[in-house]
Length: 519
Image 1 (cartoon, helix red, strand yellow):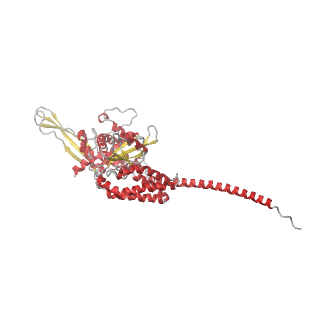
Image 2 (cartoon, one colour):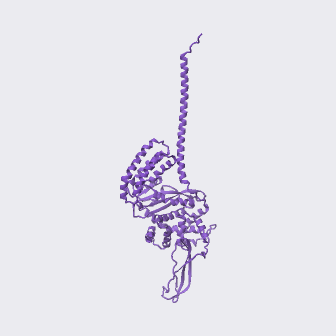
Image 3 (cartoon, one colour):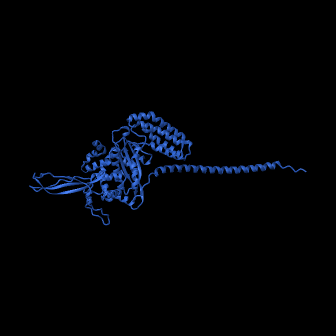
């Protein structure tokens, strides 16, 4: 007997139920997979971002290794410089020393092994009062330690004391003015100490150790006192350079962090050194190049606004918002930096090998190729060349970037770089029409290199006063270097003259005047 056939309706219902169950499982699995893929995509974006950041950090951080320095020595160094800059010279010998205060080392005789250069300052043979013959009563000898490149010498200034044989009036030649009254350093030595610290990045305690090997005992505190007094003496000259910077049609502005020791504790805070550079050499301007530095305790936008108060020319700057207060109606005009735009794409290309980033770099290279041709030409010729050869590249770059942006994940580093570029490009465009503007802010960035090198050696500023003295020194030394002038030779000349120089003729001491006279 055959078995009864199965109910086809029952079998169909079971299959539909099974199918629905399987579809529900597949849907749940698809949902899980979609969620998992989204998580992976988010992690990929995070990894991409971190790789980008890491590549940038490695490039900025890992250079030549810094030496471990004596923190206490460096702290005292800047504090003593600041104190010396603020203390009037005439008060040094008379001021009482508070209880518990550190006494400065007493002067020791200058080493006897050093060669002596003698200079005799005679009042003459005849009395200035009655015309009688002068007779020799004795003499005063003043010794000053001087540094001639490569060696130390002692200058002996001999001033005979004379008396008139007729009226017995006393006669003696006056001691010539010196950079530090009641001090014994010559102008060459003072210039050497200043250049060694701020151009060659040798902290004062290291200089003291170097001098000791030559048999010359100069305590760090003594050197700090000299630096403080000399920078205070030279401050009017640095202020004059600042006025020259602010007279230009355009200038370059930048800032860099330095560590500042917080008073009352051993911690440091981040202070800033600001640089403002005038350099018209790319378009054959007649004005000599000059750099002006300022030190501040923080990075507030009030500082550049104060520094550039009243300036209505063009300011090359990066995108730091602290400069925003500088720009506006009846204020300065902004010129953005193409190098900063390019830098972001370079970082991405190095970390990811992005073809879009590579293309941006190639297009910007085309703009710099035009600048290579424009260098040294007149502003009019530079503007014409840029309009013909650079403007089409610039316009196409901006259009192309706008097309690429929608194709990229919104939070990717490449998208961020493109948004930054599109925001800055309109502010970089003015250089195409103005031949006295530059494509980037590299002049200011180059002016920050000495600060970076010094930072690796002295690690931090010991005080706000020490930071101010450093800004004065950098202003003088870097301006001399921009003009192709040996800063030590120039400062030696200036320090030998400035004590008696008329403040109204201070421009005669500027480095480009020294270069013209030397030629």
